[in-house]
Length: 423
Image 1 (cartoon, rainbow, N blue to C red):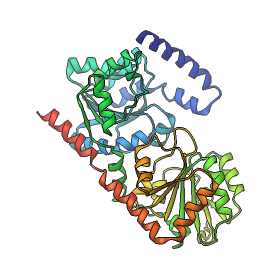
Image 2: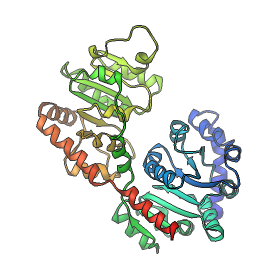
Image 3: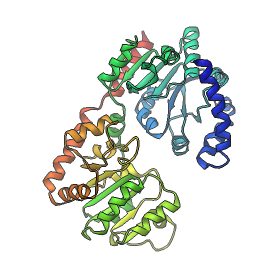
């Protein structure tokens, strides 16, 4: 099976090069990997001590950030290497301040894995949530046996449909032997990994809670949003997709004029922003137009809708929300990150597809989050939250309490690792 896997990876590498000729995203995926080894060699010396974190994409990077920060505090003389699989993670966080080196992870061929692990020579390795690359894990297992490299899964989630738990998943199960410890989010994940013979597992919870709690300690003010809000009741729509926006635009166009709306779409391609802008019949403004240098800035308080066609500020914008709508719930796999508005004590509305996300399921069950499936349900949810201030505050309190009660995963992980490495 490993031979077939390697064959598929090599074939995929050639197909990706072809796709890169037609797809900008695939071009980033392919071209971004060309100089990875040269970049690492220029920044990592043979005698450097290193810690390697791998994140599939942006969400996993944010999830792993609390552990990265603690490792940097505990091991200040080590260099931090962060790898991404996806362009949507790398392109947004390639200039992050936590890592000494941030690169794409080369494709999982046997030669790439050996070369990468040789040049990085990590003492500690963290895979965040998922992505189990057999060749990389096999190389790490060899280094564990020879020089004691330790490899961990943090905020892990296992599901029955994964290859590890199928009759044909033997080579994937063998790759898991590289992990010294599995820190998983829930009891079902612990039982699943134990069912195939791994007892080096602990329920730590999800480090994303620690990440969003830390957001409360920073400055979340934005002058433009402050001016736009003008102390009016504000609905923040984050990470929306066209299927979300079809319902939302209809509500906005029929809403009371004293309600403010901030829309931060998931995709900020020009054609999609233009389409959204044209559908909205209320007074509206785009962030890109506001941010252009000019002697006269518009009076943002005079507008009802503010479209955020940039990245990196949505988290701060949630701090101004009275109600949040988080998009993605009409697509697959489902809703985007609801913990960021939740940590600010904001009641949340989402689409119907959220079953794969434990935090969304928990908040829907506890009524802090409302799930809607059609226009009428969206209208009712917003109307209730807008017209009943007590209800709004109660649901917001449920959300913030939920986040606070689930923090602490980072402490569990770091204490365990320090005990291992100090004893």
